Length: 331
Ligand code: SF4
Image (cartoon, rainbow, N blue to C red; front, side):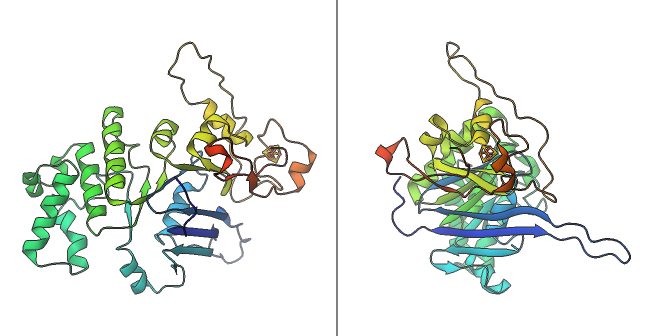
């Protein structure tokens, strides 16, 4: 996928710091730096995945882009428009272009509404079409995500996990969005159902040109669905590359360790599992310099003092035309 045209989504220096309220006679607690200076872009019709350990800030980044959590600072430009300066009402109107699919399909669906009403809700909220047109659109959405039209009368508890996630996808599609944030959309599903839902998302992208910001920890799923992958560690992006480059020639030591945990399907290929030392440091008190230096097998003295910039390296795929960014002093 080429990314030379103006990107659909441009995120610059995004920060989300959680600050505890001051208590009388108690020392102030340090801010939790969940996301600290993250920049990336997503092209039209592209899937960019955010990966990393639990607590690395990938979900907070995705929710900050949608302003489901309010970022502390930075810039989020969707289709040429800055989102972070919009009023709540203006932001609500932009949600037509920017939808989300949640991890837990059951918790994200109103149990008191029928499936048809759940999918029709965004259409009603934005005053789209007469009742008959909305019914027709809901039926079309049901068939497009692989649900039978009769299922519109059922309630969420009457569906399987995979069917509920299809319902969540139909709801996200209802308003013809340009970008869908997928927050671990298959991690709560059985493995066989995961593949069906991932393939459905890819088919819909091919048909409607939707871009996905895809948050996941399952690297096999990420490899299947992504055009590019951004690796996060403790609130920072440490590497971004196109999917093939990242999986075949990762440069950052953290990416290498993450990828070494992916099972190799060929029994003749020896597994090269590398272990990550220790626990992740607290985002309330991140290490100085390179945030990975406390766990990095290659760390040297400079790593404790100097923050490595996320800078460009020659890419090994696409004949060297795609951008490969890495934040490491020695790679
Ligand atoms: Fe490791 Fe140093 Fe590179 Fe950070 S900058 S990843 S600590 S070698």
